[in-house]
Image (cartoon, rainbow, N blue to C red; front, top):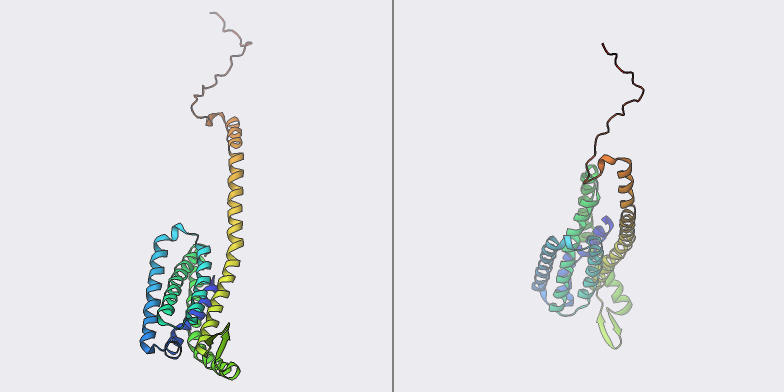
Length: 253
């Protein structure tokens, strides 16, 4: 779970430092387009947090956590593939909804699964990891974008032709694609970690329920025979000690 949160933050955090470059160089929307991105992302996060805060008791938390990571990664890849501001902002909003869900469910699952004596240490390590991942995203994102931009210009002249359609592949788009793939990888790891745990838990609960249903009546009958005073609905008559037959008669005065 901590790995999923950390890698998700590394991937999603790259959207903030690379958003202005993507809006200017790819979408041609200028700095106003980046502001629209931030607005869509913030609205999505707020919607995700509110929805999960209301309905988290009715949803399978671990499965939704892993699925939200996958959808967030796919949304970032699709948003980086768009060439219009409206469609890109739409998928950024979907990314925000999934990010809010991951945030709420991640902390909820940690609260439920960590023992009381370890909870403080776990959350201290988590907060440190979160800050470190955000720092990595802000530091590595622009450098990686510049490096990939040079490689793209030198290898394919910054463009790719797929089925007769020319797609621009500047460094910022390649970096955002890479960030989305990182989030998808974290989602796959989360799905693989959640699947055996949920399966074992359900099988164990079903087995215990069946065994309890079969052995419960037998155990109650056995206890009632061993302890007659535990019978319900009956009155127990106190036993009187038998009078011995050979008791000597008292002499007549």
